[in-house]
Image 1: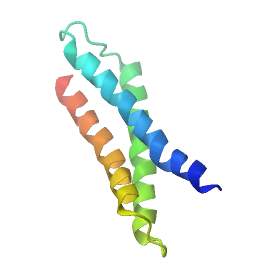
Image 2 (image 1 turned 180 degrees about the vertical axis):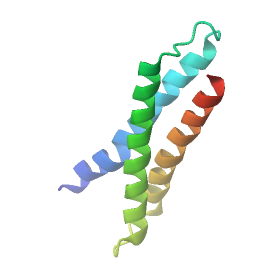
Image 3 (image 1 turned 90 degrees about the vertical axis):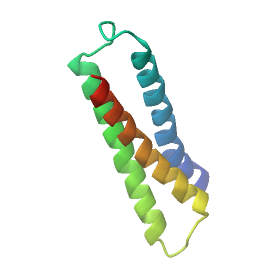
Image 4 (image 1 turned 90 degrees about the horizontal axis):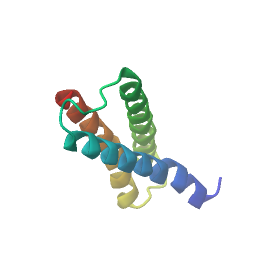
Length: 97
């Protein structure tokens, strides 16, 4: 697989998903508690997306650390941020609900 395509898939797609999760959460937290969408369906979709992002980014960070050819540290940091952000966002969503 081309290096640029692989980088896009394993680093940038989780980052874009994190941006969408952040935008949705900020929008929901800006609403009054009785106006928030507390539907189980929306929560399950966000939980699934967050779980996939955490899983994909965690595996990427693991492979980055254990690879024989160490890449730049910024990609490891990027994968770790993509792992941590959805976890924190889901915890905030749990506390706000």
